[in-house]
Length: 248
Image (cartoon, rainbow, N blue to C red):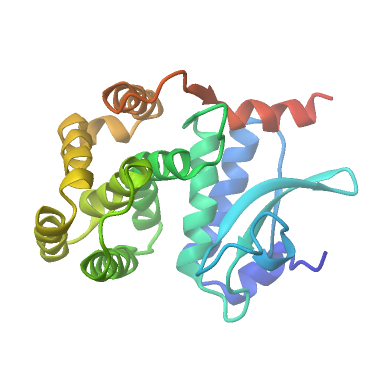
């Protein structure tokens, strides 16, 4: 696999990118007593990501030659997009700080799982980016605009997609600017009444203060799985998996 090491990230990134990398290493030493180098690679080199359509970036720990790295699987390695780098890296800093995922054991990375945990983790992630000098609002609003444009052109999808779609749009509604929030709400009422019903459940369960602590964030996720009748979900403790690597 061809990858670029952390020095390339630092050379082509900006000041907030380097601050996020510095914070990553500080938090590694604080929470797992070991350091993990960050590398980046084109996500098309990842067999689980290469065939997913559209723009996509992700991050995951991976072992190469017995050494654990955090790999940023980027949709665009060149030109580098620093805001995407700090977004993906920030997700894993939250993991180090104790933020957990709730998952459906039958579909650990299904759409509902991904959308629910992304929605819950994005508010503290965006706060983290802002604290280090990156402003994600334009990116957030662009996603909300694109989602609204898509919803205006499509019919409501089948009932199996209502919850995953509701979680995706609720993520927009929680974080986007007010004018995009109004547009989305109008579109939902006119075109997606069933999805909108689930969105109302999500928004009525939401307490923004809860999301900014690991304990409150997880409690919110549990409440939401109950409200949405998502049965038998369990915690995925990614931090324990990282620590276990160093305790082999």
